[in-house]
Image (cartoon, rainbow, N blue to C red):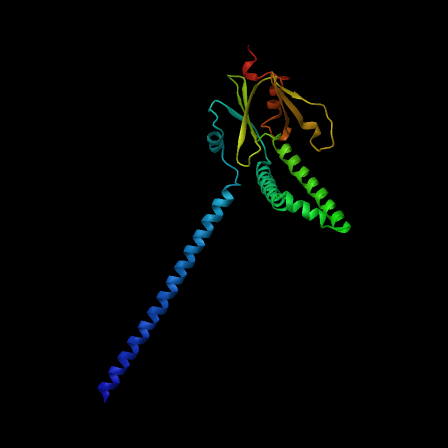
Length: 239
């Protein structure tokens, strides 16, 4: 009888330990998968926010494909806001374009829709089209305004040459403009915008490019005056 009781106790203890091991193993497995999921989500979040992180100087030279003998003299502090605005305008414009295609894509359906409307529906439709036109005009204005704000300006003192990185009409594409000292001209203070005193223009032989340059974004005020040709470059004073 005592032998039977001892065997029962041994079996009970073994079964309890196996159950605890299974439970602990499942907990470890679940915790491990939870940690893996958390790490994956953190990596994806980091990669997304790296898009809006301010790049270092070395990355900018590689990104803009600028030689080392160029110095960065202007860096737009609103670069991240410009990127968000570019993405927002393109996404919004795409949604508006798809909506217009779906609503007015078929001329037959459009004519039937016009003929079946009442006076109230026509007035509301006219208001909607007016708002849509105003909204489209706002998007176009923002896009044109963004393309006038240089992201970075590089200067090569030995070559007396500037390289300017300007946003293009595509979200992740930029244009390069090259000019020399004296080609940049300050425009008269006109308009109602807050930066009406920061309007400039690069004058080429057969073309011109309007810009908005904020003096605080330059490395030092003298860089702007040298670019305008008002002040001489200290490296060329002996010439």
